[in-house]
Image (tube, rainbow, N blue to C red; front, top):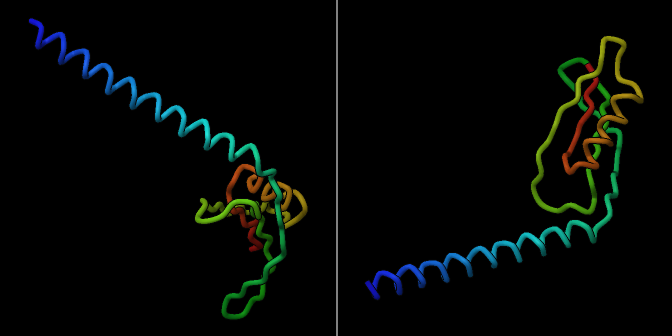
Length: 103
């Protein structure tokens, strides 16, 4: 009986200590994310097919390093305009690399 209680106590201590370490790790990650302000950089890019040269717009947060998810934004029927560029900037603020394509 004493062995069972002692075993359960040890397991509880190990689980409690591991949960506390995870919480501290997430707190430091949140602090790092709050330290860097969002700085979106948007620039016009050109790309081509066999016979057509097109202009697009790519936006990303310059404070984020490393890999990040990318999103392609396709414009409405009236073409590439400031609205799709604003949407690319909004997605870049959320941590994505967004490219507004021209078709």
